Each structure stands twice: as C-alpha cells, then as structure tokens.
Amino acid sequence: MFNKRVSFLLAVLLMVALAVSGCGGGSSTTEKPSEKSAAGTAGFKVGMVTDAGTIDDKSFNQGTWEGVVKAGKDFGLETRYLKPNGTTEADYIKEIGNLYDAGFRMIVTPGFKFETAIYQAQAKYPDAKFVLIDGTPHAGDWNPVVKDNTVSIFFAEHESGFLAGVATALQLQEGQVGFIGGMEIPPVQKFNWGFQQGVQYANDNFGTKVGMKAENVVYQGSFDNVAAGQQLAAQMYDKGVKAIFAAAGGVGVGAINEAKSRAKAGRGVWIIGVDVDQFSEGIYEGDKSIILTSAMKRIDQAAYDMVKAEKEGNFPGGETLVFSAANNGIGIPAKNPNLSDAVQQKVADVFKDLQAGKITVSADQGNLIK
Image (cartoon, rainbow, N blue to C red; front, top):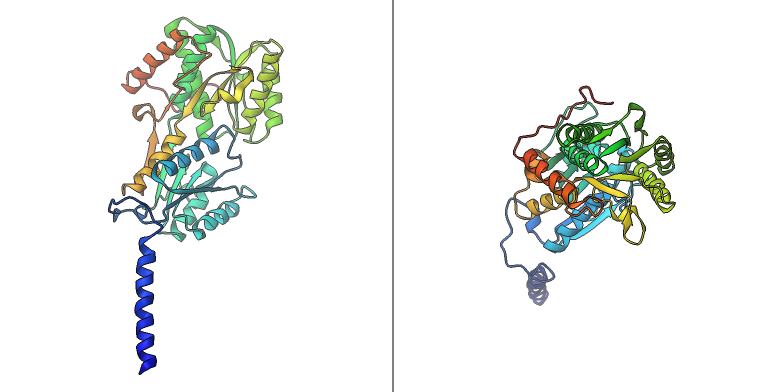
C-alpha cells in the first residue's frame, strides 16, 4: 500500500514538473499561435540548403539566405543552412533530411536543381513547409506537382534585365555591350532577352546608340567556373565591349574580377550585376566599383515574405507565385553610384510605366540573340 501511494505521488510530481517545464524556455510573445501554421508553436526553425554556389556568392544563395536571416531576427526564429557535398538529387535530399531531423519544419531551397528533390521531400515530410525559388517540383517529367506544403516562386527576370538594359544604354550612350550567362536555362535566358529589349528601348526612345553582337552573347554552361568567366570577359573587352551583363553566379564573379583588374589599370569597363546588388563585390579601389548597376530579383524579400506568411498562418501552400514589377519583386538597386541622377530618374519613370502596364517586355526570344 505504501509503495502504491509513493508511486502515485511520484507520478503526480512528474506530471507537474513536465507541465512547469513546458511553460518555460519558449517565446516571450503572448500571441495565440495560429492553428493554420506550425510557425506558431515553440521551436519553429527555418533552414536552407544551398545549391552549387556558396552562401557568400553575392548572388542567389546569399540573397536567399539574407532573407531567411532577416526573418529569423525579426521573428525570433532559429535559422541554419547546410551546404551539400555534391549537386545531385541525392545530395539535396540528404541535407533536407538532416534539417528535418534537426527539427527544421520550414526549408527554403534556391534554384531549379532542387525541383526533383522537393518533389520527393514534400511527400516524405508532409508536416514540413518548403519554399522552392526559381523552380517547380516534378518527378523528372517536368509535370509540376506543388503540394499544399510547398510554394513555388518565380521571377520576371526579363523585366529586371530590361530595366538594367535601359540604365546601361542611357549611361553609356553608345558602344557595344555583351552578355555572359551561366547555364542556358529559362531564368538566365530571360535576363538576356530582357536586357536586349531594354537597350533597344533606350535606343528607340532616348536616342542612345548601343549595340549587341551575337558573338558577345555567351552561355558558359555552369555557375561555378570562375576562371572561365574571367576568360570570357577578357575576350569581350578585348573586342571593344564596354559593359557586360553577367548572369552566371561564380562565372560572373570571374567576369567581375577581370573588370576590376582592367579598372585598376585605368581601362574603363563595366559589369552589370545580377540577382542582388553586386556593387560591393565590384569595388577595386576605395569606394570605386566596376558594377554599373544590377538586375535584381528580390530573392531576399521573397524568402522573407514566405517565412512571415508561415509565421502568421498564411503560408500560400500549393501555389506558384511570380515576383514582377507589378509587386515590386524585381528592379535595380535603390542607389546606383555609377549612374547619373538623370539616368536613375529616367529608369524610375520607365519602371512606373512597366508597373502600370504601359510597357510590356517579352519573356520569349523572338528575334533576339539566342
């Protein structure tokens, strides 16, 4: 009888202890968690798996991670990124699984290379939320399957490239420009086609005389070959190209390095950055940079918005979203030290017309180069 009573008292004490411990160590907010979202529960954690690049690539990975980190700080969330050992579907799935096993129930992935991995992950981990940027989940058959726990995000790269093309032509006024792309895939191609349309728009409407030859439009075939990017840029500059739009990740970093070397030697060449504001990456002396402007995709904002939506119980699962001029999802940097005030004002006016639908930029090649 004594033993039974002791056992009962111990059980009661254990339950009280568990209840007390469950009330401590959590968020200090008193807001009632939303029933729609796992984010309302204590310990909500946001993770990211990088693609082939690094977390400080001044481009896609970095932009995505900065958005995750900002959301983490603003909402008091734990954040972490993992870099796979390789770039295969198995490598990506492994790191997604590692994040999930560590308690991360929201995972952000940047780039089309994650499409088949997310297709599997969204089914394997139905209680997790996935954000796939610049891609849509499929089983390798290009048949999109965006489940309720996944959101697929795309950008109007052609509009961003268009604005950068207008700015470049206005600032240069005349001469030749070039384009270096990474892999010849739709997001990169649309940057190129939009840029060409922007240059032509400036020629037609503002009297500029900037040209682009087919030989100066090149897709290197990867996003990580820095040496190849530097070589391609050198070849174009040697042929008289004044500015190169580099939409190529690490390959673009190589082009930036070549431009910096030439700028140090007193040769006036430029790079148009991509995805994020790459001005700081182009600094070669003091505060001088070879980045004329950058064709930006608000990747950081997209990642941030999705974390915020999940936190508030409004995760747009099952949807495919497009960030464009209409919703301020693309543009050039707010500050462009290498663009004159007059040029920046004209580009701002063009942006307003783009938002209002007065200007339409094609997302297709048509009669454009490549």
